[in-house]
Length: 625
Image 1 (spheres, rainbow, N blue to C red):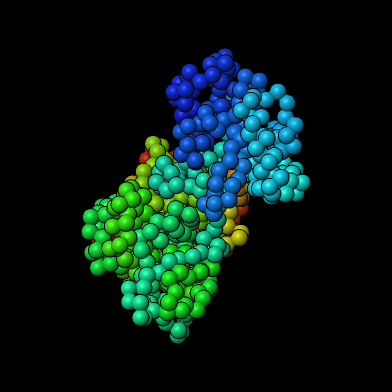
Image 2 (image 1 turned 45 degrees about the horizontal axis):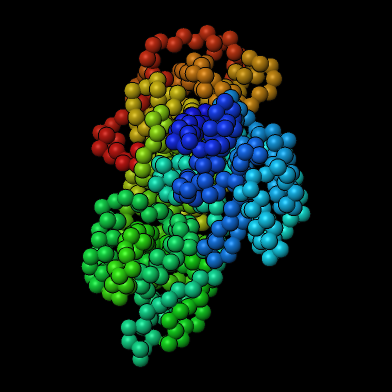
């Protein structure tokens, strides 16, 4: 989703808010001041979207004497601690949504925040003065304060030192910057993945690091009512009540599942069946449900009499649907029904002590093996996968890191599995098209995708080769744009690409295009950014001409219009690293000038890829695409 498109969505929602609250005193007072109205509406949107607070008037503190748009309010966090929040919104026109917010605007906000903290803000409304007085009392009680700067522009890193200095000068104070990109990521999470983002209006506590108390059930008072496994790794099996699951999710939300291969499905027939069992037949729940598997960093020694245990960190790696369904059923039940559910329903909890990242990943893999989970699903929560997905939100191609994670997509946006991006990147950026085709062949036989398998687990694993600290968004997006350009000039789909020389074209394109640009511009330019520029303005003719040049070069190199033996050599070249390197070396030695490339003629609907389809390929279409 392009930033401009997201801005239009938010601006439309802000206009609707202004119309909805047209009788609001501030909106009426600023009827001719669009900027003030939109900044005010943005605060209302922020409260409703994140905090789900509809009674906005009790939070926004602006009055007739205060022209800025601020929120000052206090709230109890999920640990029962009181926190004061100060939010300031900065609305801007559409032409500025792709720009970086002016540093002076951030410094002005920091100055305003400092003034509020010191209680020196003048000419404020009675409501704001009351909240500032309460804030100062909260500070004297050594309470926590959080500032949020809200803008529909991009963050400006040049103000980072100023923000750091502000935080250092005000102890127990935090600062969050919510720019248009962060808003877009959270908007997509909720609207299109149906997952609630982390609420900035509450303190966030990471369940992987927190001390967590879990109540366990003892059916027989003369025994421990749990199973303990000592070797080779410490583990327990407990019984817990729905109330325990409800309280865990109420406190930590979806962060309980960061290490899971899938998040809960907000709406599904399977979830509804779990909810109905918990609500209508709670006594049957344990018999119908497999329970949960969780990992913790520290399990204390458990006494036979214990009904509560303290854990250090917790991640539920199997059973996300069960947790969310119980939470939903329990939260919608009245007090009497909750008592019935707790008195009759039990859930099995398998609790394992963490054995390190590799062990935890394997446990996650095997506990989910009864479900159709692909290799890439086990990598979906890796930092680099999250980063790439967020960066691809700036385009109209959404990077799908886990199957089915997007419940819906907006008009004009396409969902693309990360396996597609990985193949393009491996061929173009890493210059290994042979690896793409060989992995595809073995994947058909083993169902194991080495693109997402570590070299530690398989000698040919490619994951760290593709996804590492040097993996850049601009390289991934360029690789994919080139694939998209070719596909638009052909009559086949993604699966057909593995029965062609397409990935070799991607690899050789980098060599030829670099030579072309050097000849054309006489200076070094960023090749990838230049490709993106041409793609974004739909000026791709020169790119297609280069693909045609490479394809004709390969046809001559292997005499593809000759006998069957020549064709066999070409097929061998596609999957042989030594043959690929031989041909690549020859291509690198060729002198290429821009005039020769530009003089190439393109016929309408001309395909620039050699396709080698066969019956086996047609019968073995991979449902991944």
